[in-house]
Length: 386
Image 1 (cartoon, rainbow, N blue to C red):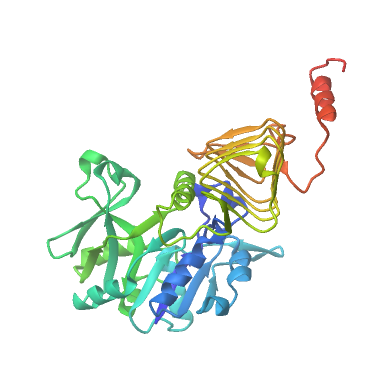
Image 2 (tube, helix red, strand yellow):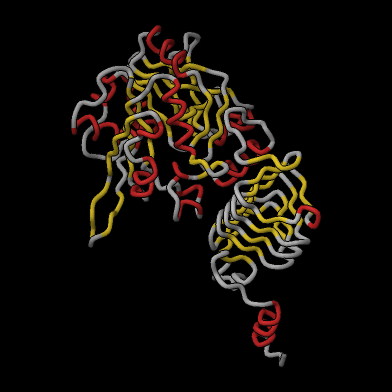
């Protein structure tokens, strides 16, 4: 059985993480989100997977390669070109990417599944396909019911009593929403649906293809399912995903490492004097991370591998990516540290290098100046003789 994962987007809503990491590789406790999708597809018999790539495509291809170690076969469709010796992405849109693959060679020759590469899901795909075929649908959207106050964040799907789709509303106001069923970005298609996608142009599934199918009155249905679905399209979504995993709210994602004390998990060879640090779970600490005496960690929190947390630093309800160093006395509350960026849970970010704060938050592989050197540098900055 065949499937496609949409992985060509730039992930602008979850910057700055996607400046250097493509969305499908964003880690959920060290495991890329797309890896969870491949596991789900394999479990339900989808063993041939096409992936359209564009932004930072080489990273996705290098990690997943031909899919053999994940129990599937993977092919890649690159959307873009080489300009001045550099790969430059030029995504064709979610539907345009499907069309490109089919025009290259008719890969989609039977019912197939399309998944967005930026969500954690635990869905019975076999049951969804069964319902799709039972209705004789050309296309099916998997929907999920959300509280009415949440509808402005999603595309709303409006159906008749039989589940046939009548119209869509893109992020409507609460008082204008005609439904509380939202589009989860999980689709079941028959190959004929590709005939309705124009070639060689950017074309979107939700914004272009679906309204066209409704306009033509084709057998286009929604299947409302109860399942775990965690969208990580924005920084607050990613934040909540990490918190939910650590708190045990997401059942299909295990916390990696070893539980060294209740609610505290570590990777390999973590350096901590447990009697001289204050750690309250749930917390995950990646391998080869060093936490100095006097540090305080308050969960839910994730500290990636190869980090260095200095004496007196506090990590409270925060996410720290790999190779991060927090200086003495730094207090991070409700923050995400990624490379040179410090991001709050609303998505607002500070470039710590540009803000001249990189002596407080920096790369753990850099030499860290001594305390006296830092004081001297600050004194010179304010024209005070040290």
